[in-house]
Image (cartoon, rainbow, N blue to C red; front, side):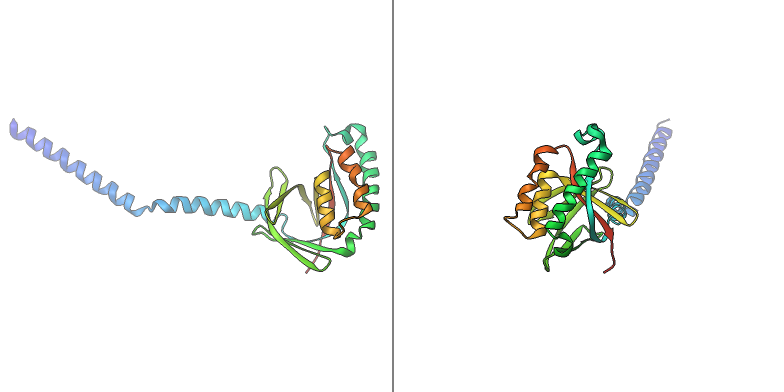
Length: 204
């Protein structure tokens, strides 16, 4: 009887050792870092795919106004209000000579942007959140958030009205422009509206 019990115990121990050895061999074949590398690679692939949606060289075409249904401009009658606002912006942009001063903007799929203003290069990084249609340009550590979406060969970028004045100041190279001062009506009357630029794809 004792012999049978001892034999049973030895068999259990032997089976346990065998199973542990097989499990150890299996674990040894799997590098824990590989799991995380796969996840990182997947995230990077997804990020690159999203960034490629807006990557390219873009040339300013005309003013752009973004307003949702809950905004003041939406309640006043979106088509008419947006049309009037675009006309005022177009006049201001022409006075600031944006088309001649601002060459183009380049967005790369690795999160970098570059533009030339008055022949001088400006560079920085950006982050893009496709689900929120949010583009954040970073320049000298300063983030400038914007609404962005692409429609074929056109890219639409809109900023909060106070941020737009900062952008226009940068693009025009003018510090004491009466036109810029006159645009203060934007921040005073259109706080719930985003305004900016309609861009068109261009070749190098």
